[in-house]
Length: 346
Image (cartoon, rainbow, N blue to C red):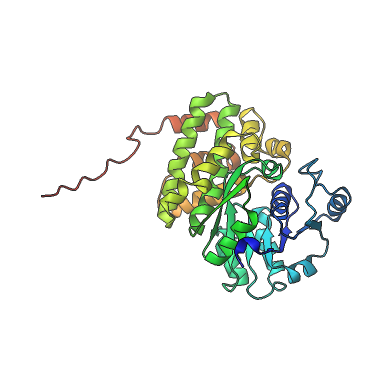
């Protein structure tokens, strides 16, 4: 039996916009899906309306998508667990899953960011908690939840070191409107998905200040250079950074106001304080949680990430955004890229 014929019975942990959108996509593709969230009233409302009016209003659930309030029973019965919670809650949820999950059952997640307590990428956190007997995968790429739930054309990447599980998960998601690629580069996919959120804050700030399209394009391009430096220093693959989880996700998050990170930056650029901007967005902003950890990683491996550094100064040190822009503009003039070494042959 091919993987496309397998009903990959999935439990999705996290009933926010992205968890619900993935649950819809997988169920729409003929798989049985259970969706669980922390808020019992929210779950009851979804059960009654067969929609998630809080996060994805008006989008009906497929018949194969069911709501569950029984976390333990769902995990024990699951053939596959997909975690879609903010990075600050990822470790806690995986700790809850660990004693319940059957041996060898796969776990994937659509969470982007780092583990706050340790600064680790989530793949390593998951291994530390559940061990290496469970196939693990990361789902990433340029994808807003509402567009996936509306069945609009989207492409994403599944990153896993387990070929069989990567193909099973990709097949469970893949459809005429959701194209799914696979890769082994778990590290690169995580770097792209983490750093792009920080950079989206910077482009939002720039646009909020009224600096225009030229500045936005420059920030995206030089931000990509920062992602490349970090990824190469940590051992990720260059090809990943030029793929969906790299430049694709960066462009999406930096240019569309569906991005919470960009909206945070816009609010700050318009003159709101950081606290006021966070309140205006009203939802988890992953780039804010990741910014300091990303900068620390860069400092540990001895590379410069000036845009990330200025975002941190604005978010955590009270810098005026205009001062940060001036610091970036006044950096020493230099060549955009190193000249390649020419090897002369006799």
